[in-house]
Length: 59
Figure 1 (tube, rainbow, N blue to C red):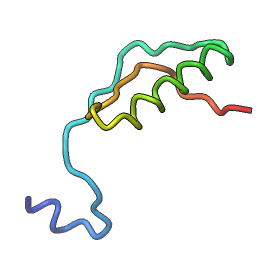
Figure 2 (figure 1 turned 60 degrees about the vertical axis):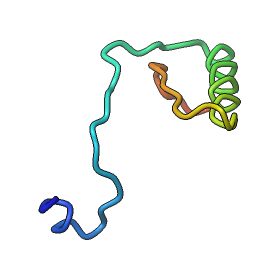
Figure 3 (figure 1 turned 45 degrees about the horizontal axis):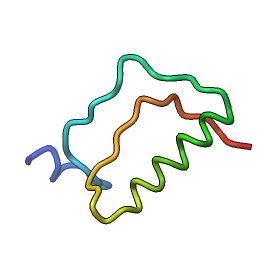
């Protein structure tokens, strides 16, 4: 598009959906969920992975 041509550091164009409600899990639950999501992302048969987890920094 014309806008994309005007932006120097253009990376991606598209619609992104963000969850209205995010899950805020305890650290151990969050680690388990992240492990599951990483496993799904590594699977060749899985095309997209979505979640409504609230992002945290892991210790």
